[in-house]
Image (tube, rainbow, N blue to C red):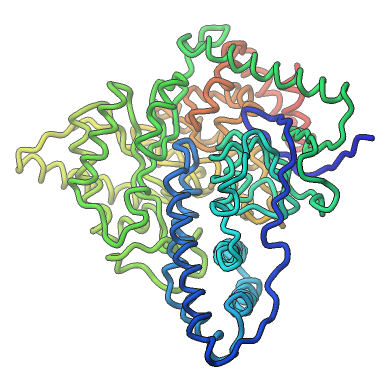
Length: 580
């Protein structure tokens, strides 16, 4: 008899997997309290130090195996875990507990973990409460090496090609290594749609189902499983007819992927002749090949934070310029929009005087353009390098988290000052390089007309716009059900921004996750969006819909949709738009 388990589905470009179960029981036994003698303390501390070193080495290996298409936040997460392992506070406290309590390293680490988690759980701020997951992941990594269960060592002799990994939970590091070894799908007892592992599963194109309570108790190693990331279903002991149904779905997915490859070179035009610009969000220089292979006509968002991560100093102008020059050479004439640094003081880099060890809420604090204006050591070399790069190819400069026109005026004055400096030094730059702003906070959307008068283009960052407008942390499982890109307030802010750009005669694009989600493609076309920037892997799915769309018809229908927003569920209106 078929056993069906229901969880939260995580669908990627391939939403279905069939394969043998690999039951990952690492860490389920927990840490047992164990006393040691005074003579054993030194050896136990040494054993702990070796486990920390092994965990650090393991995460460094993971860092090198992160695919280029993976969002930068995952790389930042691994970097944060590496920094925690370097933190003497964590290590020294566990050593102290081992010595004072004369207990095993496993138990000392568990005691310290409990203390840290309790502190995070008592914090009022949802953003900081979610940081407890980082503590959990780092502790799990060290505990695994103390038990000799480090994922690389444990799986070294295992054939993981095509398996469905079933686990209590998976850290992002686990997920990367398991996928690297050939795992076809993930099933976990914990986790939600916006967890780091879920985000990673999408980037790795791995179907996953999360939050399946106690599933490891009911499955056996090697038994055939079906994972449906679209419906959140896991099937065990499926009969032949059910298996054949899913095999047909897999074949259909493969056929569709081949069909999508055939439209790469076609112009992105709607049935009524509207030209749509599909661009790529890039995290690292290595992403260029993926973007070009999927037919991106530009880079609508190039994140530069990687230049600042995992280092103890700040990149200078020459390093910035070398990076941007290499990107322009790889793009070979394709335009690129470079976003200035969007880090906050929660991601501390040495040399930043503005950084504080106590940040109440990093998401609302000194970050992005605010930090850059406060820290000349950050901003000056990057702005000068972007200006110099503009002489080598089509470059646009984009400012993140703009809140008011004063910030824009200050940046524009700095740019003019740096242009004068470069001219005096005999260094080339494009005097007409476009400068634009990201619309990511409600204040910016409500001030879009004033901002548009000063800018050469606007770009809507829906991830933060939704988060700040609805006061919801999308990574917090307890409230992420409130994260709604089609909330009437969000749709009105987007429309307001589009109208402001149109009125000023400047282009407007969208670079948040909403841009690459085909559920919203028709809606965005009907609202007047003509530039969309997304993860490279989403471009062809969106393009397929655009080729079959009629923008004039969609504009009429979306105008009617807006008249019903206060009386009808937006999701019902969107369904009607998509299935008319």
